[in-house]
Image (cartoon, rainbow, N blue to C red; front, top):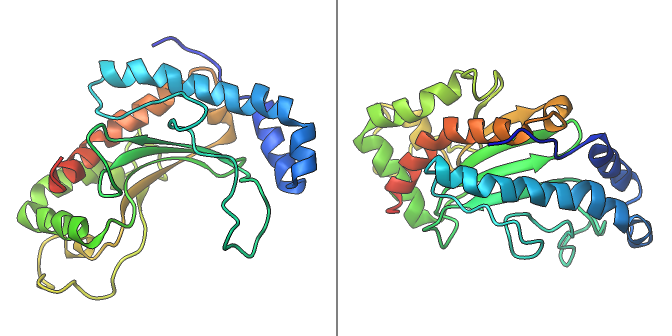
Length: 232
């Protein structure tokens, strides 16, 4: 996997300015900058991750199409929002599981925002049936769950010192799960996801593709546990 520079100071500067000038006229006047410094290099990063996923045997999709691919839309859905700002002030990509067809399937996530960038993965707010399957899998094999998650909780070197599980949890054990079960605190989770922060220097560094791949590979056992739990 070749070392390359994708995102730059110009990328982050555009996103900072978009936060200040979040309106259609400004965006259209600066659309060339958006395409040159934000969209196109991000799509190139996604394109370069596709063969890397295949080589690393990661069953996730890196689709570099500008529409309908892994990159999420820059446009906000403001139909029911009080905030009518038309644009997101960050760029993001979701790398879906090859066999996933709904929100029960785990996936990787990459979020780029000045001062708030991060790498993530897992399942966010799974529907009740999938949620029950994940909780059952943790209860049935707490040792496997611990093995899949302990490097992430400990802030393993490959994931960064601030890495950890994120999301909301119930205050009490869910119905059918005794309070003294091993890993009961994780069984109480509503979300099964991890977050690994990225500095602006890391985002704009040469070889950012290698850093992203390294962290995806480090979190792959966690996603594999979730995939098996929901039947993929």
